[in-house]
Structure formats: C-alpha cells, structure tokens
Amino acid sequence: MRKRTTPRLTFGEYDSPPPGKHTYSTARQLLMARVRVIYPKMLEGLRDDVFPLFQDYCDTLPGGWLDHPIDFEGEYEAIGARITEWASRFHAEREEWLAAEALRTLDLWLRSEAALAELRWNSNAPPEIWMNYTRDFEFSSARWEPEVVSWAQYSLHMRRTFERALRSYEKEVREKATSLGRVPVQARYSQENLDWLILYQFRGFTSVHIANLMAESTAPPDASTILKGVKAAAKLVGWTRLRQSPKGEFS
Image (cartoon, rainbow, N blue to C red; front, side, top):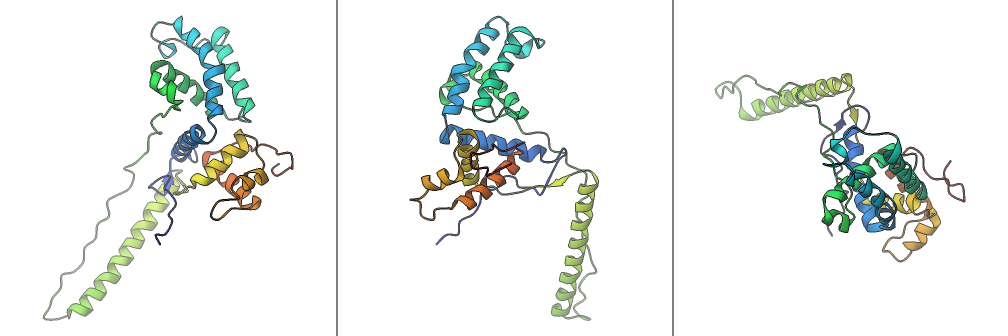
C-alpha cells in the first residue's frame, strides 16, 4: 500500500518575521478554502449580510473603494461594524486578519461575478520572502593521485571531508537565519485538522459531536484526538483564542 503523506504547507524551513508571517498567510488561505467546502454558510452570510452594503457604498465611489481615501466614519464604518457582526456569529470577531481579508473578499466579489457565485475567498499574494542573505555552498579538495592513493581510500576521505563541509555550511546558514529573526516553520499540515477547526470554531460543534460525525470512517478519531487536531490547526493559522465550548474543552 502507498504510504499516506501529509501535504506540505511550505517548502522551506524558516519564515520571515514577525513569526509565521508567510506560513500564516498560506495556512489561512487553505483554511478559508476549506470553509467553502465544509461550512459554506459562513461565506453565504458574508454575501447576504455584508456584500449588499459594501456594493451600495462602492457605487458612490468611481473606481471602487481602493481608489479613494478611506473614510473611517459613516458608511465605511458601518461596513466594518457589519463585518464584525458577521464574524461574531461564527466566533471569529477577535481575528483582525479575518476581518481584513473579508473586506478584500468583498472587493473581489464586486469585481468578479464568478468569484461571487463561487464564494471564492480573496487570495492575495503571500508576503514577500527575504532571500539572498546567505553565501553559496562551495567545496573543493585535493585531486586524486592514483599512483599514490587507491580510489577506495581517496573516495572515503572525500566523502568524509564533504560531509564535514556540508554540516558546517548548514550550521552557518541556520545561525545566520536565526540572527536575522527568521523562525522555524511547520512544513506540513493536516487538512483534516483544518476541517475540525472549522467545525469546532465556526460551526460551534464540540469534539464529541465531530467524533460522532466521523464514526463511520475507516479509522474514526476519538474526541481527544480531535481536540489535539483543533489545537494544531489553530496554531498553524495563528488563531488568537479558541471558542469556549459548553463542556469547557478549552479555556
């Protein structure tokens, strides 16, 4: 049987500051893409309760809201308040990033009927990655003199020398990355954990309820496993605070 592999969130090992900048952006896009599948009611609420107000507001602004100075009072403030109301219904009012991306999603829907019909979440380009702060890896050693040394001896010496040089280069680059504030990242993620987070946080299910939903799967998880998965997914997307369930599963 083919071994199950976990999808990669990023191909690198470090992220730019602040902690999780690039990783959070990618993970949040994945989370909201799964919302459209697992719990579309959340995006339908944004469409039905917020988008009409946003559309009316933009109709008064030639070129759209991005081409005008933002008025933090009046109609614009009303849109922000409506987004907060929408987010609070899904236990997400504390997440500033979600409100900001919701506003950009409304703009996407205004510009694209297809995106609106598909309830497509805004997919901004991820934050810029800082590179080119390390040197190239270079390796050289003495040539092989076949009249003096056998190939077996020479090749063994070369492999050992190369491995030492490679380890030294790895150590140098990791220390450089750390000195510049780069942080280690979680390279892989579990789509299942993201789904559980959606059901737990946005839909309001308990871990027991989620476990019951999956009771007929090939290897059904128990409530404890689901709680761990919810926590892992929350950490992955940088969720501020998980919902307090009726059973007090989280504080």
